[in-house]
Structures are given as C-alpha cells and as structure tokens.
Length: 480
Image (cartoon, rainbow, N blue to C red; front, side, top):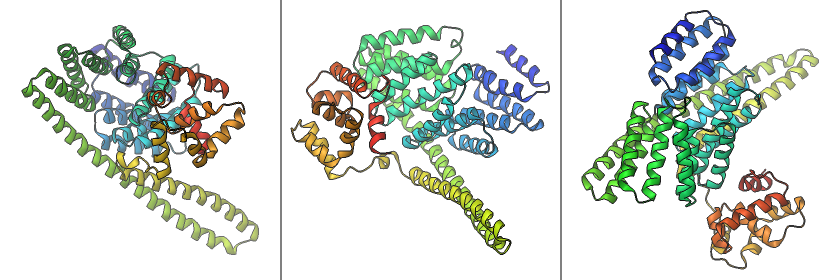
C-alpha cells in the first residue's frame, strides 16, 4: 500500500501530457479505488486536476471531478457528489468525449438511484449506455465502463420490480468481464426471485473463488456485498447462525470502506435474523441502529434533492434571461439589411428552440424529483385495472377486452409476423402489462420453465435476439 502511494506521488511530481492524465484518471484511479481510502483517493484526484488545469486540459479536469463525485456518492454524501458532477458537466459542455459524457451520466444515475427516483436513474443510465456503445470495443477501459453501466442497470431494474430484465443485464455484464459483485447478484436472483438454491450455491462458490484472485483480493466493497448476499442466502436455507456471522463480516468491511447504504441493509437483515433466533435484545439493538442510520441518510438525501432543484432552477433562470437577451438582440438587428435579418432569424430560431427543449426537460426533472418513489407509479385507469383483474382470475374475456382497449399492440405484432396465434398474442399482452414470469405462469396455468420456453419462441417468431427484453420491446412499439 505504502509503495503504491509513493509510486503515485513520484509520478505526479512530473509534468504530464493529456494522455498521461487520462491514464492516471482512468486506469490508476480504478486500481487505487480498492487500495486506499475515499479521502486519500479524493486528495489524489485533486492533485491530478491541478495538473490538468496547469496544462489547460479541460476534459481531464472534468474527469477528475467525476471521479471525486463517485467517491462522495458511494460514501453517502449525495450533496457533495452533485456539486462535483455539476462542475464536471459545466466544464465538458463543449467536449465531444463519449467516455466522459458516459461517466457523468452514469454518476447522475447513481445519485438518483440513491434518492430512490428509479425512473430518472434509468433515464440517465440509458444515456450512459448509449455513449458506452459508441466507444471502442477493443479498448479494455471502454468495455469495463459498459460492464459497469449494465451492472448498475440491473440494480435499477430490480428496484422497479422487473427481475426478468435485471437478470438479462447481469448476464450482459458478466459476458464483458466477470466480477464477484455481479456473480453474487445472480446468486441473489436465484435466492429471492427464482427459488433455485443449487444455482445460487454454484454462483456464490464462483464469487468467493474470484474474490481470492489478484484483481479482487483487496476489494473490500465487493467482498462485503458478496458476504451480505450470502448471508441472505443462508437465511433462506434456515442457517440462522451462519447467516448472522456472514452479515457481521459484511458490516465490518462496509464500515472500513464507508458504504452506509450497505451497512443499513445489513443492520436490517441482522435485526430480522436475531428476531428469528429469539434474541430480542439484539433484534432491538440492530433495529435502532438501522433507524438512526436511515434518518441520517434521509437527511442527506433531502439536502441533495434541494441542491438538485436549486441547480436546475438557477439554470432555468439563466437560460430564460439568455433567451430574452437573444430575442432583444434579434429585434435590434431587424432594421439592418434583409439578408442579415433572415440569417439571424434562422440562427436564433434554432438556438431558442433547442433551449426551450432543454427548459422543458429541466421542468420535467424538477417535477420528477419533487415526487417520492410511490408517486412515480402511474395511476392505472379503470380499464387497465379491470384487465389486470381479468388476467389474474383467468377469465376468457381477458384478451378480447385487452384488444378492445389496447389494439395497437396486436396490430404492431401482426405487422411483424402475421402468423402469430391468439395464444401468442395473449401471452404478449401479459408481458406488455408488466406481469413477471411467475405471474404469467399462474394466469395461463403453465410451469415457470414453460413460460421461459414460450418467451424464447416468441423472440424467434418476432426475429428478436435471445437477450432482448420483451417488456421493453413491446412498450417501444406501442409507445414511441
């Protein structure tokens, strides 16, 4: 550890080019992230930022701020994280660096996820994914960034209760580069969403094995997550004392790397475990700890929301003032030669339209942030609720009623394949309504494994790739 820090200090004493700074901010920062404390890594990034400023490298400065924001976000200080992300975004406005834009959008996604605004988290994550897909496929740093985007997207999908989509993105992440965290999350999927203890055990064994390799041996955060997931698995198998031991080890590591959200989840799990063990003193101890930590995180979340709204309001005010000035300028020049008037009018029209669009997006974000997660769930219409009930009760008039209310789905599907049967269309309707594989199996009296096979056949009939998320695909063709 000491030799690593001395080596980095010696490197930073030299004068650097833009390429040298990129290497430090991307490759070296990734190595140090698991070797030194968040505070030390923040100070280290600030030194690189000074070097980037010295040579006038604005993209390097923005990347450094993004790295610092990441550490504050994972440390639970969302307000500081937003402040540094805002700096990075302002500096990089004129850049065309897809990697930098992807990083900034992904960190915004992390902020909104920790604020429990999953819809916004997914929007920013989608932007990050689009930038990531533009990067070089033969560059390891680019591939690892896309792996990170897929991995976090799976977390957001679990939050909005789409486990079928979540597991797809976990496997996408695994294909790029297998790491213990994603493997343990797959094991968690087979613990909580598909009861397959043998599969869960296999993936946990694989996760623990990779943790002992050189790349992950010092990664306390990933080890803490694997231990937490494993504790939940042991709990599901009735091994309470072993589960308690695993969760306590996870807490110890999470405290060392300052990951309050992970500590909070562990406190809640311990309280439940001690309750099952009949130890009311320990149950109440960890319940009180979780309540205290939750209050602290909620206070920080509120500050971050207030800051985010203030930033957006300030940006809107500046843009409105700028719009007013630009309109006045256009009027001032209206008396000059007609040719210039036409050119200026076209220029300002396009620019103002772009700014108005951005204002509308800002207003949308403010409205979304002002709502809590429960408010983000759209209110279902009476027809929608009625159709859901018909499906759950296995009524024969479910599909006719669905066709009457939402004719666009089956029309679009028949355009793709006119040979789709009524059974196929009804199955697609259940997916469009957001039913999970288990719920579909209940509605059509089919085994869960058969539902997965049916989904595979539907993809083939629609000429879709095997990993395509059918829910997102059906939504995209009916709600462009």
